[in-house]
Image (cartoon, rainbow, N blue to C red):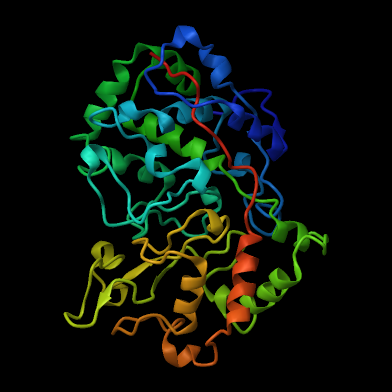
Length: 370
């Protein structure tokens, strides 16, 4: 439902959201103006480099089921609210941290009771423009809405027994009723409404206007000499854009690089996409991450096994880790001409640093519905 009179504004307006301080979800609402702490804001335009005629839809309002200012506000509360977890200790933002481009600075995620999973939380910035409907590292969710509901009932993440429990818990927070009605036309809380609101907030987390975007728009001073050389290598003889392509620098597809392969046992620590498809060719394959804001997301790979971008570049340079399912795009026999020099590694890293963008930054609301 799109409210009448809805206006779009430049992405800089959305940054107003980020000027708010964080606190625990159970902070007394009477000490902070609840709605001022999380105002209704117009849906932002995509920043430079995202959207546009060559990459439809051009704006978030052109999506099949576009976000509204009201669902985004509700979703922002829910995204940062730890009460969605079984013991009130974990929110979506616990692992998807704004300061890390909605990823995290740890090798793997940590859920309730200090439990650790086997994968690192991927970023979701610019996912409203995902070229393929695959979410999570293994693509098991077909939409951002579906993705948002997964961690809630994962026993080592948010730990709820089922989605009915999530709905019951949020329904008991009477202060939320007004904002569900504002967003959906009635105060009823459903898992579909919860995940839609969270996903709509996530859709507004767009990253662009990076140095690379400004360079491509005509500002040739935006990139350093090393970053320009890295750009040439990235889109040229480095073949990085075989998988990291398009405005968001990902094909949204799955590739086996050999990460997690144990040659002695001839098994993967994590079988990746295979767990979803049961197709042999998908063993050890994981979704290509966007490399926008990649400098903020160390450590790297699905398991956080590589500490630096330099380490990642050298891994690709040598053709990954040999295994029976290695993707032909990274296979050593197709990568023999690489073996990057130290200077080239530095240049590629400088180019990737130039992809740090603007528009997605945020902090938690200062108060939550009670």
